[in-house]
Length: 392
Image 1: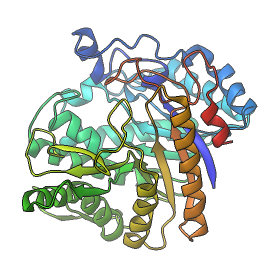
Image 2 (image 1 turned 120 degrees about the horizontal axis):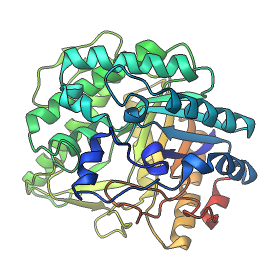
Image 3 (image 1 turned 180 degrees about the vertical axis):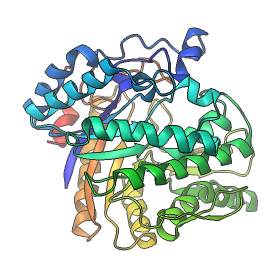
Image 4 (image 1 turned 90 degrees about the horizontal axis):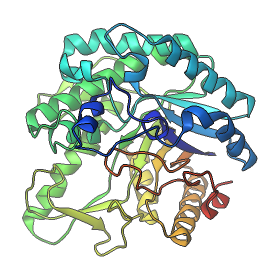
């Protein structure tokens, strides 16, 4: 299996004026991104740095709003930048897996209904996928069409932590449905070329106590994550809590690799909150958490993949992203080493794990943390951290 690192346009280049995040940035609701971590001007040196340290795979998430700042108008300069960036990667022996939807979407797309509106989504999204595939399809090693459906929909429509900032469970459910349909449309367009992978969050969930309410709450959260994803990829049925089950052509068996995000396991109690997780914390209860609040339980990572393999037998998998936000470099190094060991053991146990991505390559911008995060294997000044030695 291969090991890679990841970043995104928002993290590396900053928020674009046409992005859904731009208005919130202007109003001071999120930190200003500036130029991210300077990737737009440093990418050639960055790829040389990766090659120098033995890292040959990068996952890069596009900012759709930079490519298509107005409906149907594609920015030639941004497409040229993308082609130049991918050429520079190739010249340094770096294989790039390209994400089409990652941290943001165009503001105009939200204004027109976004992923919730079937008419807009089915007209706008495939057009964008086609343009990118035509421009750079022969330069990429693989595709991640849509990143973290559950997290994106919950943040936008249930928790109100990203644009449009709503707290409407029904709209959140419709957004999940629409994004799975968008995934299916991208799969139809991209399959047969470089491999296409999901990027879904499937947390392990445990009741925080022995109460009936905690058990019911953890089961409800599982339905919004595991049940929806597994039934989509295995059965071709879109089962989103709160909506009628739909049979969707081409959804069963979609994805060349099932890519999963790992952020640790979650303990859930019975108290209901605005967060679809309810009141929750790390698992095992009392575990050390990073600066975002995740507990990097590596034994849970192994358990998650074994359970996933039971649910989707015969499929191949990717660890689409895992990270640790900390300034404790010894802890980061230990967790990276443990994660690599777990992945090697999974392969030895006949789990068809093809590759894994550490998030991120370099400290960058995040709309939740601004520039205060410390997830990179390099810092913002491109000083290498000791944890990188555990991957290469």
